[in-house]
Image (cartoon, rainbow, N blue to C red; front, side, top):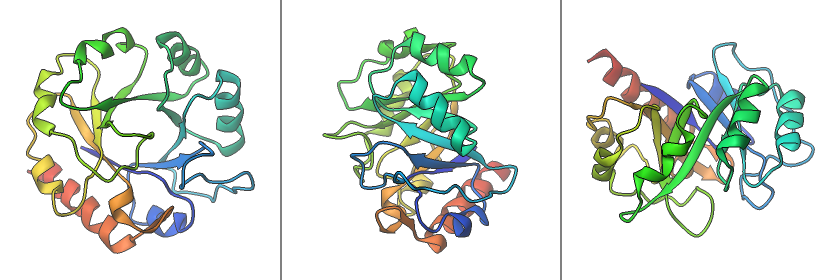
Length: 206
């Protein structure tokens, strides 16, 4: 079971010391957690995967920023096509394809991305692209019959993380935490994140 901390911008080294499996950096300018044009990626422990989060970017922009910041992979939150994902994977990057989920979501939609992404991310559907602070009904994940492992995002906190970890699905690969672990946009509460990581690690040991 993996844990990804997304929307990092300020206390990056502090969170890296905990450490999570993935750290997410948002390169979407309209996000309150956008890293900014003058962002400098600090040195991180070798085991942490650096994931760039993109919305409606071009393949060229994704690849250029991945090289610039030494990203391990990318998380795609826009209307990217399976062909787009294939091109990014061909550049040697891990691809996480995000889908906005609500009670009406048709999991058949993800089928065309099978084999094109390394992980899917099921996030709460809202007005924007993530960071809503609201969970969706996790029970509907039982409708997912694909073959690609997935992460769950959206409204996860230490109050409901234990309930999420009870999810029994063979492809449930991890959790993605963000806005409910913040003291301000882009600034994570290290104690709360540490508690979340401990819960996930303890769950792995069961």
